[in-house]
Length: 103
Image (cartoon, rainbow, N blue to C red; front, side, top):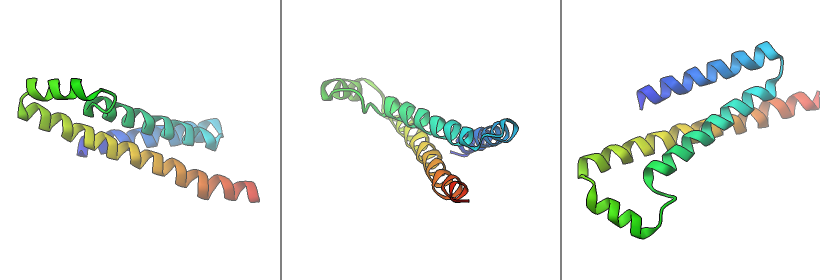
């Protein structure tokens, strides 16, 4: 989880720098939101959300318990980071951009 948070912090810093250099605050929202969606999609693929029950049962029988725990741990961590990014995107939009449009 710590490595994912460091990677996520790097993405946030790069997004903030790109938005500052371009002078467009919506670029920050787009980059962070897209990163959050990518993290959630990868978590869904790893957890098997997009598969049917037959395939999930087959994978459960074939893979080892240690591999399953590692995959589920990584999926859970990626999902948490993705939700964190989507929350940052929503809060940035809600509290910064809407207040700037009121001025």
